[in-house]
Length: 289
Image (tube, rainbow, N blue to C red; front, side, top):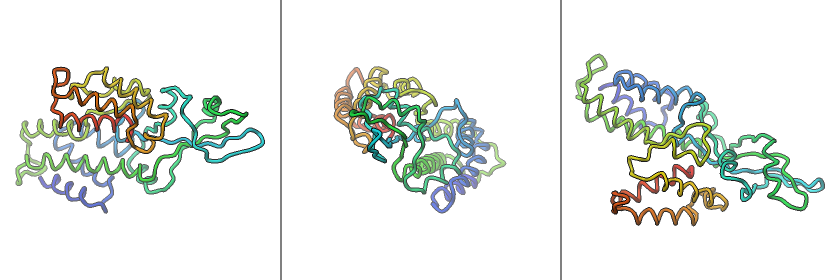
């Protein structure tokens, strides 16, 4: 199909803006009559409305910095400790839901030292983290360099992988006006769910402890109890530097090892090779890597 081949070509060309790729993807989605695909493309182009599920790749991990003072001495850009915060407070303060349009993301993705302001009411949350009369005057949340580009790369790579996966199913001589066989439509729809949706949308407004309710992990036969244990492990490791540096902490490592032991048994009928990939992906998604 000409439109599909054209889309593959421009997706592989980094000089072509992602917005142009998505506009062409709209035409393909219309031809395939795939409503989920069409909806995803529209949301990526225009931004995600409030109440609509966000893909996991649009969730960013933030590091908090603040100005602290005791009235006499003041320290600027001080990295704030999270030790005394609850799981819910940590999630709300250190998670950035990127629901903007592609053009907006492209606008700030190439900038260094991207930061977001935190409401001043949050300053009081850190009152127990300091002694000798110090308090937080201002908080700023920062994301690492290149994080915006990672979102754009994820979208481009998912769309390209999807197009490549379905391209072999289309006859070379089929064009935009031809009627597409039902089996091809069903195949393209299934591939979209596997490659693009990836069973990992996260609902806006949910706390860390609720994420698993919005993530379809039944396909991997992982129990909700195991997911809750992963969330707990991530929460514990957030109190150390490992997660902010995108490394597994001790609690995550222990969870991974325990889960790997279940692979190939009655409790988890998945090969160890497949289990390793599944577990690593889950950890990355939940930890915001």
